[in-house]
Length: 152
Image 1 (cartoon, helix red, strand yellow):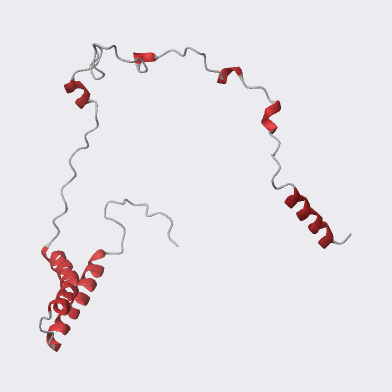
Image 2 (tube, one colour):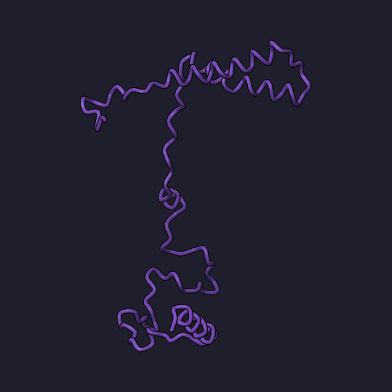
């Protein structure tokens, strides 16, 4: 037989058995006893008990007062304040976003777009970007210690 005919025969068998139910390999294995749940499972804390007709569902003698329940919830600490930055970095961010913002508003609101205004806005964007990149620094942080890791 050629490899092609073997492959065709395998495909015919797959198509012929497509709608047949697969054998369950786990049917012959017994169910482990540790997985069995007793008929009357214990109910710790009475969570599954229905309230009696005279008792409302929300009230329970063992329930903690509202103050205790509020204390059980995690309340994250307030976030640290944002860094203020110096005047140069604030002006750089303003130029970086202010130049394109002015050009966008001028286009939308039909403000004057003389040549010097467009030049100033583009120059402000470029100057803000360059200033922020130059001030970023490419060295290790000052508190990194004597070991600067693997240097190639």
